[in-house]
Length: 186
Image (cartoon, rainbow, N blue to C red; front, side, top):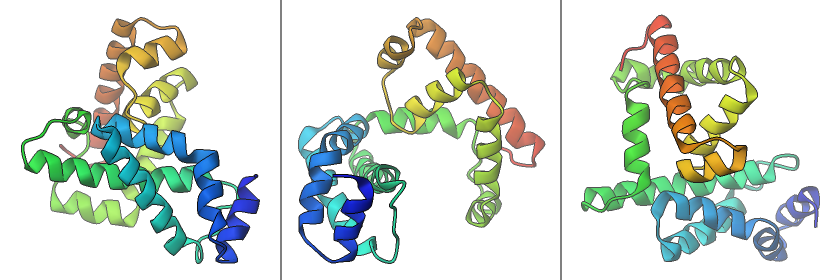
């Protein structure tokens, strides 16, 4: 079933929308959550919670052309929230490591949070990603959005793990410079 048909089911408040969503995107959503949490059971819970949130958000949203991105964002936020709960209980997850890496670039002061709410930081990040070569953008997104391990990114794009690590390091430095130039400081 196509995305537009699934969204139509949500809009009609037809419960089969959840089953169709699970058939089309369940495995990908679960894999996304599992990458963040490193726990299959918790990933399944995030997947199910995603369906519940989607049920509540469609309508008013109508993600006909971007259903997976819509669902992926929900799943990612649920998994990150769960990771934060776990890390407060001293459990380790890859999210903590990646947060530390990006924390070197992205500011965390109150002024920056205000700008983030206004969309300024998003604009800068979008421009940064649009201004780098596609291969680098793909590596960056796979690592920091999908939480793919370095070895999988290397295999996916035919790079060595060392090249991927170096590329990510240089991209973080470049992003940091861009943010500092825009008035942000980590």
